[in-house]
Amino acid sequence: MKTKNVLIGITGGIAAYKSCQLIRYFKKSGYNVKVIITKNGLQFITETTLRTLSENAVYSDTFSNSNEWSTEHISITDWADVFIIAPATANIIGKYANGIADDALSTSLLAYNKQVIIAPAMNDKMYNNPAVQRNISSLLAQGVFFVEPGYGDLACGYKAAGRMAEPDEIFRESLYFLNKTEKLEGRKILISAARTAEFIDPVRYISNCSSGKTGFRLAEASSFRGAETVLVSGPSDEKCNNFIKRIDVVSSEDMYREIIRESKDSDCIIMSAAVADYTVRKSDRKIKKNGDEIKLDLIKTKDILKELGSKKKKGQILVGFALETEKGVTNAKKKLAEKNLDMIILNETSKDNPAFGTDSNRITIITKSTIEKLPPMDKSEIAEIIFEKITALFNRGTE
Image 1 (cartoon, rainbow, N blue to C red):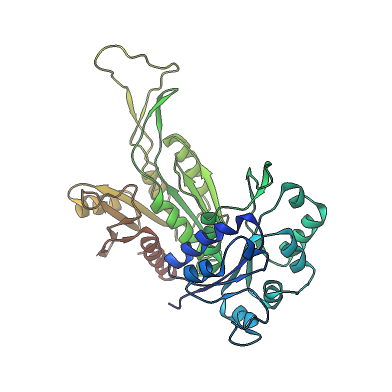
Image 2 (image 1 turned 90 degrees about the horizontal axis):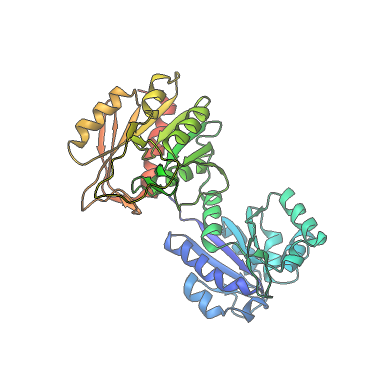
């Protein structure tokens, strides 16, 4: 696959230092990066820093002697797959919205005809000024994507909205545009992720160690393929892009309710969440420490996957997960059959392959006719492989 190219524009705001981390995210993920910076931007960060991080020449002047040719800032707009402005001041937003080209960055923006992503950063009074909002509305109508500023401490001393989105958020939203296809356009994909928490009393609960990383990577892979993606997640620190409909839940009963509701018109359901097998008969008051033991009244939870399998519609694909410590393939194949699944992902957890909380894993993909054991790999890569197999099932019909 061809390596994608990212062009980052940096303007004169205190948030310019955050762009260094944004460059690092892209470089670490294997993308090519080039930078255009305004003269005011150079008041906050040096060309040497940007050149070192991007491993490419930095453009700051339309007719600089360092440019290989006088229109080099125009030619890189053909090179770039996305153009990100971070931070974007009110000035550059106004120039872009009104067709003004008076430096290397604004000229390049007007010459660029692919996806532009803007991360505004400015004082909240500037951001909320009707003129700035009018310019933003104009660019939104042209298809420009905005990563909305957050609420926090501003350089001027205020605590308000206007703070540039964090680099990880800008990176996450940009990945959608860099990877999007139409492979699953028109399909609805429902994914569960993370863990559930079953409360013992108002302040304590029982749960497990699932971080939700696999489920969130699956949701991203689904969104990249153009599917309507719904992610039902238990408690998790993971984040997803704005092209995914995220529904947050806590308990197994919450998970059951949302999954059953969303499943009715879903083309594919992937149950990657580690849903509790048992819940607790909850006390309305905090249980006081009294004696050396405490006995909990455990009640079996609803088997969401089994119910989905029993109600599965023709053409609907159902994918389950199995976490095993022994007899992994045998137990997973049994679950595949008993719950009427099209595919099951086997996690065999051990000291050398902890399935929970890590960015990588070693899995086995099992269908009714195949068993494929994968080597250890990043969970983003795992999600891509799983979706390639799901796409193939859609193309030929379920087994």
